[in-house]
Amino acid sequence: MASLVEVVLNPGEFCFGDAGTRIHTLLGSCVSITLWHPRRRVGGMCHYMLPVRRLPGAAGPLDGRYADHAVRMFLHEIGRHGTRPSEYVARMFGGGNQFPPAQRRGRAPDVARDNIDAGLALLDRHGFHLAETHLGGRGARRLSFDVATGEVELHATSRRAP
Image 1 (cartoon, rainbow, N blue to C red):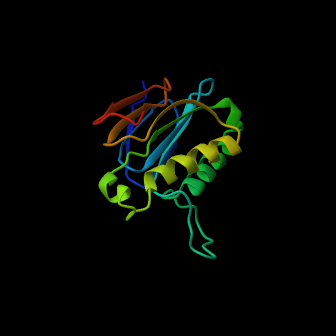
Image 2: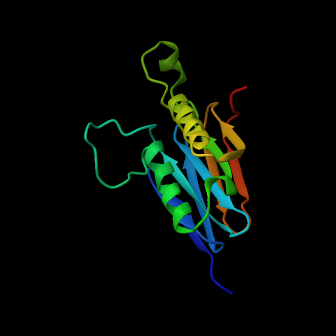
Image 3: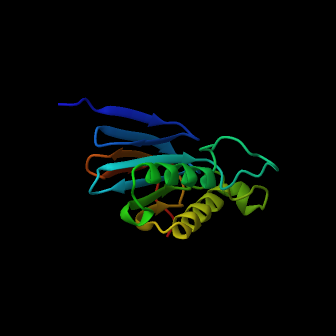
């Protein structure tokens, strides 16, 4: 029997693996997307921090800190496996508001909301079918994604927004 590979994603990291992979992360205002191919039992998770990379002329390697780059990393893996985005079960988590008092006074950008909006738009644009979301609200979320089964275990420290 093959051993299970346990991967802990830090902010800005990305992992795509097979049925022998379980991926974990902890989210605040960041967002994670999980993708799972039920027939091939491959999938992955990203943990992005910001919607887009805004540096002018910022060519170079893909950077998982940004939603647009993280989705491009997924698309690379999907192509490498000879599959299509529409064949994957997509889920999206996070975007918890970590600074609500400052935002009510208009002093801080709503990074969490921007992260949510970017992820939803990117998944839609590339033809992914979103099966589940747990987004917004306040507090943190801890995720564990089992690539063998496609199951995502979620532990939220606070409730999500209505």
